[in-house]
Image 1: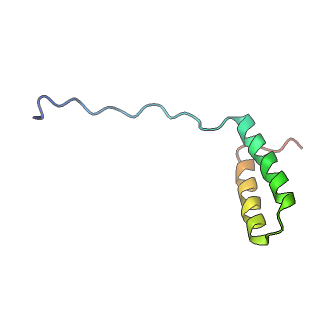
Image 2 (image 1 turned 180 degrees about the horizontal axis):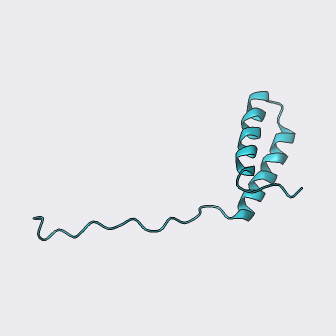
Image 3 (image 1 turned 60 degrees about the vertical axis):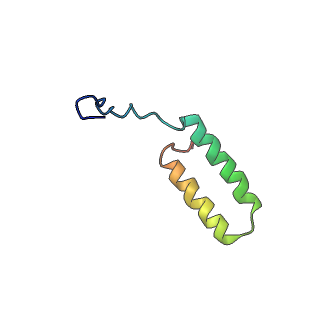
Length: 62
């Protein structure tokens, strides 16, 4: 192909959210339940950090 016949580059499409607000709440609820079941302190620290990061997107309901 030559440059004259090559198709112009396409612009990237509009970004869409991967998760909904309800998804973040569900993930936080699942993490909370899992955190209560684990005895591994390192795993619990990772769970708590993820729970906190998810909370920055969806504030807790009081």
